[in-house]
Amino acid sequence: MKIAVNGDAAEVRDGLNVLELLAERQVKMPDMVSVELNGEILARPDFATTIVRDGDQVEFLYFMGGGA
Amino acid sequence: MNLTDSQIERYSRHIILEQVGLAGQEALGRAKVLIVGAGGLGSPAALYLGAAGVGTLGIADADAVDLSNLQRQVIHHTADVGRPKVESAAERIRALNPEVTVRAYPERVRAANALAIMRDYDFVIDGTDSFAAKFLLNDAAYFAGKPLSHAGILRFEGQLTTIRPGASACYRCLFREPPPAGAVPSCSQAGVLGVLAGVVGCLQATEAIKYILGLGELLTDSLLTYDALAMRFRKVAVRRSPDCPLCGDRPSIKELVDPEEAACELRP
Image 1 (spheres, rainbow over the protein chains, first blue to last red):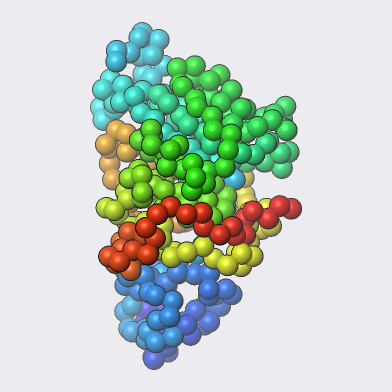
Image 2 (image 1 turned 90 degrees about the vertical axis):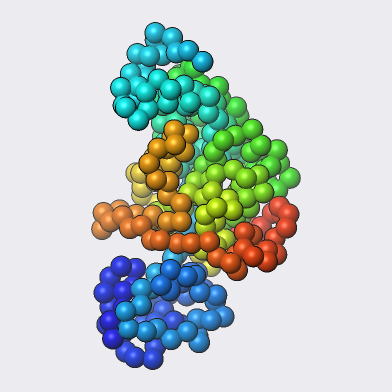
């Protein structure tokens, strides 16, 4: 099925949950990413139980603490 | 407030803009913007807001200028190494535009002083370099009811959002709490492209000016991400979270407290 990750089209297998998607996309530190699914921020405990569906828009939002 | 002849000349490229005009320039002159952190983000923001004629600029920073700052913190010069950053920043802004009132706060903004410092300002710019400070400013802006430009930078990437507390998504709507200490690299550990700070700090200054002038669309309910290597800007739509611990339906944060210190406090 086709989804969009950070605006880029991606082909992923059916039944993938968000935690598995993070691993598949080689996000090294998934604890450091907020995930927005179709405009809603997902609670971290829901990553493993939220199944990605065809056409979903997924945004990985990364912590960035710099500024000085 | 009536502009003098020299002010009309100084600000002529603003005044000639239909959307700014004399009234807009006078509004800038009455405005007060607080910049927390006179570093990579705060330097360009302070210089451009000073040049733009923002009447009062507050600069808060507890640090002294270090040689390793000068690759990006363009408000400080080589001769300033060792001086308090608020001193060299204030001197540079006054030299650029003597009409700006600069208030220096040579202290770290914390729960104990944040609300008192913010109280008198119209708009706050987060130019800090730690998660603890960024969460604190987000929370303080909420309790003080002050609009805030949040930004973060790392390596070749940056991101920013504008927050109108209670009306648009806050930093905690997106990132609930600071990451565990050491989990995310800091700029001193990971590095940062100097000019990246300039780009993002200038975007923050743009938001402050738009807010003061009531122009255009603020970057509220949006996270703008910038990848300097791909030269790609993306605007990610975000929204207030009913589960936000600060501005959600059942908030757990009811007063301002200092978040735990995290990665970016580490010194090289």
